[in-house]
Image (cartoon, rainbow, N blue to C red; front, side):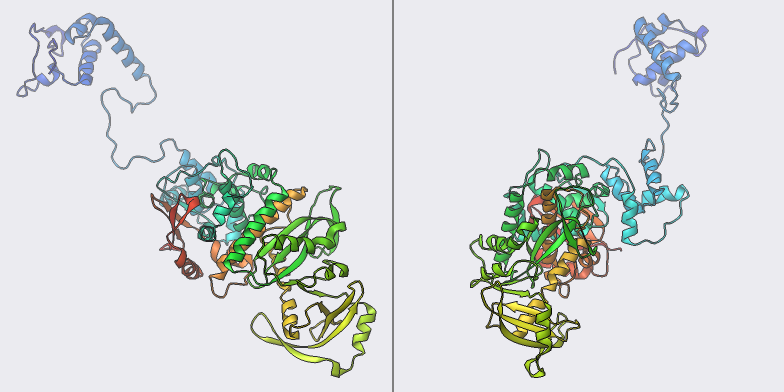
Length: 608
């Protein structure tokens, strides 16, 4: 114990008696020595101030009695007076009340105010929890529920996924700045589209992540090339209506994890990124993807081609008018071409920079694209009659077999109507559902004006149309039934175009710049193909449209746990979840490069 020259005094100042000898130690047998020989510094200050204010001892005497200098004691008195006038009465200098129970999570009340404000915008408990996770507020769903209940809110009515997403899109909050994820151990919740993480193993398995890293696409100082492209892919796969419509995705950490980020970038970043894209970047990316599909063996010897119109709702004079089947009129738009494999549904080629004067040359440009890789096994091209001219058909001989529709003039239709019944043959054509349908065909060879030679013509009637369909081809060896079946599958590309419009929102163009739209279409094609890879592994869903695949498998919420070696994703129970988990069995524990080479584990939650 320090050797201080303390003095003993009574409560009454008249009975003060000073000890000339210092009190070396406290005598535990004498209770009064506890007050006369303070050991703790706070206790010493308390006794000194009490002697000054209550016993009214002079300051110099108190300072001498408690081993203070007079200046130091006056400073102690000054600080004590300041402490007394403070509003916070809990911050006592000497006596602290011990509060029992768990420490209060929200010391300032900001978290509770945020929860109440989000509830007023009709967000559910899980949605509020996801928003709080983004802002670093580590509270449980039970805590959110208790705050809402104590504030008198009723339960929300049952809503579908679209209504919940619409409510979330109305919430305008300042989201964190996008940055590369450091993958520190943590756990968080995600809403709506967490199951798109199931597609990351496919990107790793087929080498697509490495392809993106080696592509010509730009990157920024804070977001690398892979995360930039995966950000666009995440939005495409999440059925986001348009980048500039809302930025609710900035509140979903699951979408950010898909791209290796804390959260996805905002609309301004996405728009500015596409300013740096050129057609060569898109074309090289499609060529590299095409090599991957060829090596994986998911492409057949046939390609279906068709045009689609991408409307623009502005007044830019550099755009031409094109016919829109969905609008049933010609309007200012961009004309795009899509090439699809009929067996797998993979789209291998796209281009939006098609002008009227070069429209007939598109089929030749596609062949150049397909054969530039040096390992093309393409044998058949199936397309509509307006895709190219008869003169260009001759340029496809003899390497490429084409299958297209001949324009039905009045003279040709009259000649077919005059044919006797013996000239028509009844055949059975297998349909997509495995059943068959009978039609009548007339298989003959005709001289085609502009083609410069004879061509095979197959007239089809009994298919529900008033006029017979005329299929022309340069393949004289293939059986008639197979040719009719092959052309009937061309309608799959029209179905794919419909998917691009409905799910990937191809008709909601936010720019009149063709190159920006071309990049948007390239990302749509990329997303479509990744979805098809998943559909191939789920029996019975191979030919389902993108919207069906999204609703049944990808639109799901759950939790994510990140540790040193793995990323564990637990999806909420759903009707089609067992089929998804079965498809992921062969890809479980696959290290994913964009997740810091951690193993991705997909599992099911214990609740729905």
